[in-house]
Amino acid sequence: MPESAPRPTGPIAPTGHFMMAHPAHVMALGFGSGLSPKAPGTMGTLWAWAVFALLQNRLTDMQWAGLIAISIVAGWWVCTLTAKHMRVLDPSSIVWDEIAAFWLVLWLVSPVGFWGQLAAFALFRYFDAAKPGPVAWADQLYHDVDPITDRFAWRKAGWGIMLDDLVAAFCTLLVIALWRAW
Image (tube, rainbow, N blue to C red; front, side, top):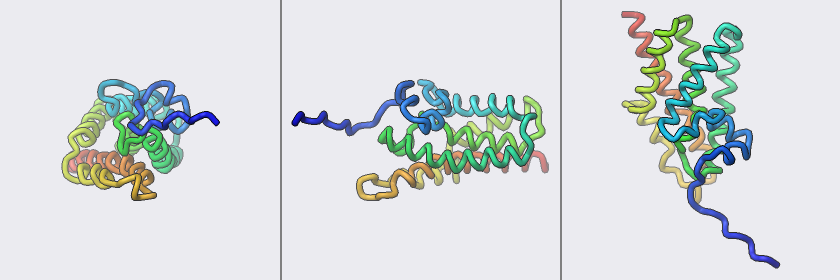
C-alpha cells in the first residue's frame, strides 16, 4: 500500500485556484476582490459599493432587506468554511463580511447621492480598519478559540468574522444618524 502524502498543517494562501475550488470560497473572497495583495477589505467594500450602485434602483426595499439578511446568514457559513479551509481564524482575504455590512449601510442611508455614499464608505472603512471601542471588542471576541480543543471553534470564527463588520456598520450608521439629527 503506498504511503499517503503528509497533510499540510500551516495556513493556506488565498489564490485564484483556491477561490475557484469551492463556491463558498468565491463568495467569501468577494468574487476575487479579497485576493488583492493590498487592502483586501477596502477592495471588498469597493466591490460592494459597485454592486449596490448597479442594483440600487432595481431592487425594492423588501428585496434589499432579503438580500442583506441572506448575505449575513450565508456569509456566516461561507466565512466559516473558507476560514477553516485556509486554516486561519480571521483571514484578511475573506471580505464577504465587508460586503454584507456595507450593503446594510448603503441601504439604510439611502437615498443619498455619490457624496453621501462616499462619506458612508469613508466612515465604514475607518471603523473597520481602526477598530475603535466596540468594533475592537467584536473583532477579538473569537480570536482565542482553539480549533483543536473547541469543536465549534470554526463556527465561532465565522461569526466573529461577520460580527466586527456588522458592529462597524452600526457605528457608521450611528455617526450618520447623529450628523443628520444635528
